[in-house]
Length: 301
Image 1 (cartoon, one colour):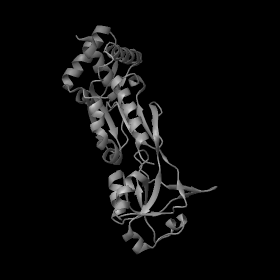
Image 2 (cartoon, rainbow, N blue to C red):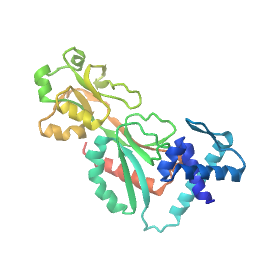
Image 3 (tube, rainbow, N blue to C red):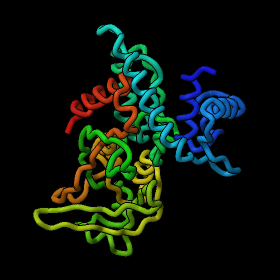
Image 4 (cartoon, rainbow, N blue to C red):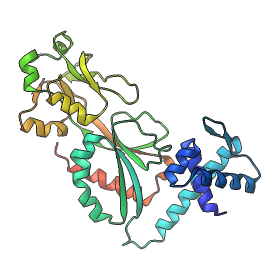
């Protein structure tokens, strides 16, 4: 029994909550994963996991063993990084999940610089606006805008994205140009709804001017949970939308969107990178954190 491989397998099963999911993320067969856990329990002479047909849960002894195993694996990774020479580059596979508009407009165009700096790092990007289980899905980190729901993760703030309110000329031609945000609550106006991956509900529009603050709940003809599709619906004239200004820059330049309520302001969207506590010492993760932090500082206001 290779204790290191078995420890990694045990940690993955606990985090994934499933032998099948653990096997997929480790590129092993489910039979191999099951055998490794059985060997570990036989070696320790204690049951670490409760198995049912629907889920796998950790026993009290298994929970204590998991905490020590995570620390041991993290220490081993840190030891490996510590013996490399100062000139060596972080290496291995780094799994990152990124919102789709941020990936296409900001992150992916800058990847040649990342690869030039860290040629031995293989970056695997999950591109979506869905809520990702960082631990269960075996992701090193997620880049997200807004408030993070999972309080068990460590979040590093990397910047703030200014927001604006926009509409397509074809929409304004049909519905008229609203002079005040409250007009969006009138029956003849529509917004493009953005669905929260956490609640499944559309997000309200919050804005302020001087000491006045408003929260607008408007009707929508369509609601979407993907940023690129959300922008496309606004450009198509499906309603008024609010989004980070970097997303609107190209459609504004082409005349596909017009700004609204320029005397009002939206609170900026905080951007963060979130990761599991036991991965904070990873050299490859630290390299990505430093790089994306510098990338955000280079974004135009």
